[in-house]
Structures are given as structure tokens and as C-alpha cells.
Image 1 (cartoon, helix red, strand yellow):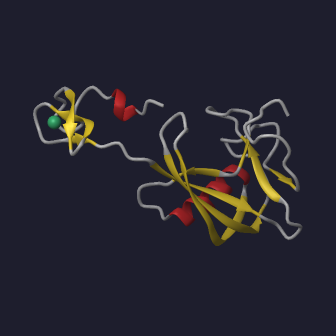
Image 2 (cartoon, rainbow, N blue to C red):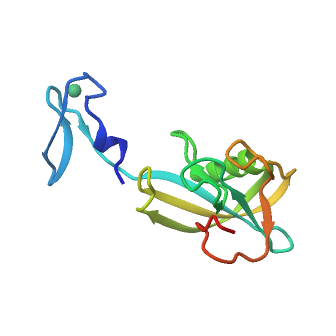
Length: 160
Ligand SMILES: [Zn+2]
């Protein structure tokens, strides 16, 4: 994983070259001209486990990289001013057209192996309260999200 922070060349504040150096006990990129330090932090994302009254789970098939074609929970990154619960609700609406309400926080997962950037993923248990299942722009055009009762194989297996 090489985050954009590792590949950055210039200070976003003054445009001077960035240089690797020991800063606060760790190798970091810092500006050669001003005090700016490019800290690398995990992204914040939310995912939804949407259970309906028949105890089916809502899954989406990814239409974009990474993991194109893989089944996934509706999920995405938080906006800067968005609480994590609201991000989960928004992602389900955008990806599936389903309105949900959050019931509980199931877990907070650290995902270090994401190809883009490591992330803290807040996983919420949700239930549908409205809307119509439809494909969003992140989901494959061939079909909407799908309610499943059982998942076989690995979630990242695209051969199924
Ligand atoms: Zn600078």
C-alpha cells in the first residue's frame, strides 16, 4: 500500500519540496521551507449490515475498482462533516436506493490492507425503513443490491 501521502512531492501550503525526515519519532514527509508535516492517518469509513424482517442481508456488487465485481456490504468514506452513522445511511441510499435506520454499532474494524489507504471501518447494524432497491452508480448496472440469506465462499471471490 502506498498512500498518496507517501507519493506527495510538494507542500500543499507553500508548494516547496517535501523531504523525508525523522519527525516525532517516525519517518515522515515534511516541508523543506515551512513547518508543514504530512501526517499519514487511516481514513474513516462506514459500512452497513442491513437486515430485513426475514433476516436477509443486503449486499452490493462493486462496479468500480478496487475489488470490481466483488460482493460487499454497502460502505464508503465519511465526508469531513458527516457523523459515521449518517455515512452508513447515505451509502446504503446511494448504492441501493434503500432507506435505513441505524440500530447499533456492531464493530470498529481496522482495515490495514486496503489498496488505497488503511481505514477505520465503523460497521453498523441497520434495518430498512423505506425506498426501493435500485442500483447506484457504484453498483453494477446489471442489477441492484441483493438480499441474501447465506454467503458462501470468500467475500472477495469474483468467480461466483
Ligand atoms: Zn510548506
